[in-house]
Length: 239
Image (tube, rainbow, N blue to C red):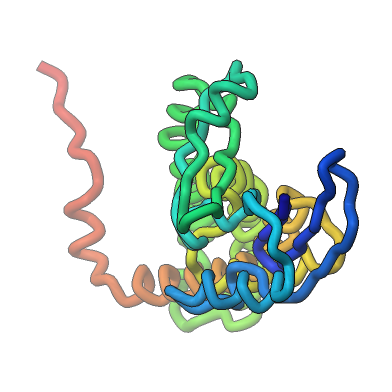
């Protein structure tokens, strides 16, 4: 039997004997992010060249949307029979083991409806505190730049922290965005997946959010006062 641990940034293969003990192992940096679409069979064959054992059982991100083929999760509680019934054959003699999901509807609803709005809410509140500075004429350069940077950094940190569980538990840490390569870098250094996603967010989100706050501040500054006045709630007169 050949066991394969195919993750985001690395590929590890193990040749096992009849007792399940490792006879030989090989590893490379051919994680799924480094494999072009359609090249998974070729990469696997290169890695296990000379090994004739079957079956080949693979686990890890190789079964994600960005991997060889997506293997649907098996809901917990699940035993060996339930897992075996969901093995995904990607070629004769080669199978992907599905992941296990303990997600609940409560967690899904929280991730889909509560966490994403938290980012624009925080951004909106911070921008609201700076309206006087953003609208002031002439432009107070130092206060303007300071608030853009500080509020952008705060929003970026909030974004990195609150979005990490969504990225990990709903997308397996791989979203297809450019930050996925940063996640792979931290995984390569030995960090756990959740830690890698958080660190990736802390490394990239603050810069992104500073630019977003700057754009929002400039747009708000350029918006005519008359138009802003039309958005204010009208006060009804007492009868």
